[in-house]
Length: 451
Ligand SMILES: *[C@@H]1O[C@H](CO)[C@@H](O)[C@H](O)[C@H]1NC(C)=O
Ligand SMILES: *[C@@H]1O[C@H](CO)[C@@H](O)[C@H](O)[C@H]1NC(C)=O
Ligand SMILES: *[C@@H]1O[C@H](CO)[C@@H](O)[C@H](O)[C@H]1NC(C)=O
Ligand SMILES: *[C@@H]1O[C@H](CO)[C@@H](O)[C@H](O)[C@H]1NC(C)=O
Ligand SMILES: *[C@@H]1O[C@H](CO)[C@@H](O)[C@H](O)[C@H]1NC(C)=O
Ligand SMILES: [Cu+2]
Image (cartoon, rainbow, N blue to C red; front, side):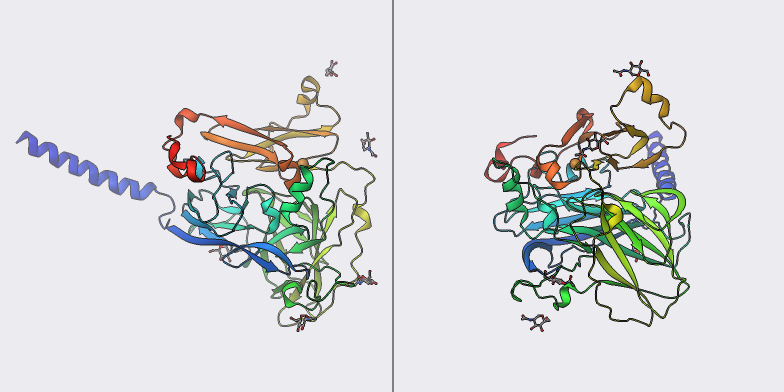
């Protein structure tokens, strides 16, 4: 008798628990999204100059991951590069509970060797704009990157309004391969990578092919015609911007249109209006743009290099109003004189894995804690995962070490990372659960390692 009662009670408790759980699980529609990505070399003419790039399922940049807050993402990465390892980092995703899926070669995993498949599993626990990219050597600059777009569950709305949502990836492009560049950086004497040959908007740029064989550089190749964003007059667009440049700090603008910045690195920001947005490698922003100009002409969307001597021509894309689309050839594209600086140093965008940080302050000259602590904003500092450290200056950050794992903190300039501008934070390792066996050991040594 007592036994039966006991079981009944347990059943009722379980039932109550089930109902309660289903009520508190926030995104009720959370699902698992499964992707299979084959990583290969492909010849691409992204800026008209033909070079070997790295593609995901044939695409450079790679496909956009669109998910809803709370979804579980599973990506099976098949490395079909013949001679190169791969590791993919999910930039801005904190990997709470899955630190082994952070995708940093030599830190959270042994890189995926040619012929191998590795499965990344993680939850996108916050809405916002993120990205993914290779975190193996300087491989990112071969085009192995893309955007992650996390939207809110049905019934929950953003704290701002827009009609349509578009993604724009900004990058710079070198004609030498990442392999040649990293070899140069490790040789004596040191061979610096120099300036990129072009800037890309949504994977398209325009290099001046004059003097080159058309088999190498064909300026009428449709692959390098400028990308276009066709808008409907009167509508407001949310543009999700992500900078994946190898080196360049950029200014982004749309001719005659103002932008309202509403999100940065996956955090809502106090909206502000601007004509030029400075965006550093590793940063993401959402801006709202209302199509409120003369619809009978085209406008240029452009990016230009800031804080370096501008040897790289501006990147251009077409911003036009439906149904008008005028074919307009790129202008001679002189570098923007405003971005000229005489100084050889540059901003270093620092990126932290696994966390966001508060930006408490920044200043010029040598940091002095007892003096500079007075300048800290402890009231409403912005929260980011990437922040520029300006030449001859300092930036003060604070973060909560609340995510057990090993996390890279590094400069997002590919060459600087390769040269060692990085540090690893090890946090609460005793609380990290069962690390998948696939993260231990490389190739033939894989079976020798025991967790
Ligand atoms: C982001 O995802 C939402 C919902 O799936 C979709 O409507 C929107 O077009 C996506 N935006 C981009 C830039 O991919
Ligand atoms: C250049 O590309 C265009 C468009 O793909 C093609 O029609 C043309 O034959 C190419 N020119 C040369 C010289 O390869
Ligand atoms: C391309 O380069 C050639 C030779 O350097 C130059 O004469 C020409 O004006 C350039 N074209 C453009 C569109 O910049
Ligand atoms: C760059 O700027 C810093 C600080 O303003 C100055 O000390 C340094 O001499 C400058 N270097 C060059 C090469 O102009
Ligand atoms: C740091 O600032 C404090 C307060 O202004 C000053 O007393 C001290 O001399 C400074 N230290 C250095 C090393 O400059
Ligand atoms: Cu740097």
